[in-house]
Length: 66
Image (cartoon, rainbow, N blue to C red):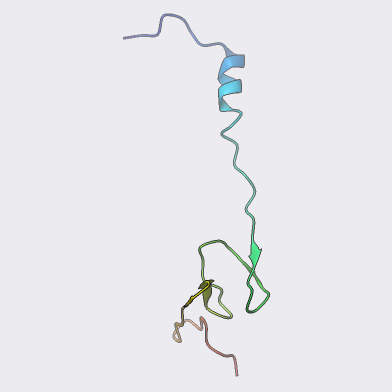
Protein backbone atom coordinates (compact mmCIF):
# COMPACT_ATOMS: atom_id res chain seq x y z
CA UNK A 1 0.00 0.00 0.00
CA UNK A 2 1.32 3.44 -0.91
CA UNK A 3 1.21 6.52 1.32
CA UNK A 4 -1.63 8.88 0.42
CA UNK A 5 0.71 11.84 -0.25
CA UNK A 6 4.41 12.33 -0.75
CA UNK A 7 6.29 13.63 2.31
CA UNK A 8 7.80 17.06 1.74
CA UNK A 9 11.53 17.71 1.60
CA UNK A 10 11.44 19.97 4.66
CA UNK A 11 9.53 17.46 6.74
CA UNK A 12 12.00 14.74 5.78
CA UNK A 13 14.93 16.99 6.76
CA UNK A 14 13.32 17.89 10.10
CA UNK A 15 12.82 14.21 10.89
CA UNK A 16 16.45 13.42 10.02
CA UNK A 17 17.86 16.32 12.06
CA UNK A 18 18.28 13.97 15.05
CA UNK A 19 20.22 11.33 13.10
CA UNK A 20 23.53 13.22 13.01
CA UNK A 21 26.46 11.39 14.57
CA UNK A 22 27.82 12.82 17.80
CA UNK A 23 31.57 13.33 18.34
CA UNK A 24 33.43 10.61 20.22
CA UNK A 25 34.31 11.56 23.80
CA UNK A 26 37.30 10.01 25.48
CA UNK A 27 37.77 10.02 29.26
CA UNK A 28 40.95 9.93 31.31
CA UNK A 29 42.01 6.65 32.85
CA UNK A 30 42.21 7.15 36.65
CA UNK A 31 45.24 4.87 37.02
CA UNK A 32 47.51 5.97 34.17
CA UNK A 33 45.99 9.35 33.24
CA UNK A 34 45.91 8.44 29.54
CA UNK A 35 42.81 9.02 27.36
CA UNK A 36 40.57 5.95 27.13
CA UNK A 37 37.35 5.16 25.28
CA UNK A 38 34.26 4.19 27.27
CA UNK A 39 33.81 0.45 27.84
CA UNK A 40 37.33 -0.24 26.52
CA UNK A 41 40.49 -1.43 28.23
CA UNK A 42 43.33 1.02 28.80
CA UNK A 43 46.42 -0.45 27.15
CA UNK A 44 48.77 0.93 29.80
CA UNK A 45 47.05 -0.07 33.04
CA UNK A 46 44.41 -2.62 31.95
CA UNK A 47 41.67 -0.59 33.67
CA UNK A 48 38.10 -1.15 32.47
CA UNK A 49 35.97 0.02 35.41
CA UNK A 50 36.44 0.21 39.19
CA UNK A 51 37.11 -3.31 40.43
CA UNK A 52 37.99 -4.76 37.01
CA UNK A 53 41.49 -4.82 35.54
CA UNK A 54 42.49 -7.02 32.62
CA UNK A 55 45.98 -8.25 31.81
CA UNK A 56 46.93 -9.77 28.47
CA UNK A 57 50.72 -10.25 28.44
CA UNK A 58 50.78 -11.37 24.79
CA UNK A 59 49.29 -8.03 23.66
CA UNK A 60 51.03 -5.95 26.31
CA UNK A 61 47.78 -4.86 27.97
CA UNK A 62 47.96 -4.15 31.68
CA UNK A 63 51.56 -5.28 32.15
CA UNK A 64 54.47 -3.14 33.33
CA UNK A 65 56.77 -1.81 30.63
CA UNK A 66 60.16 -2.55 32.17
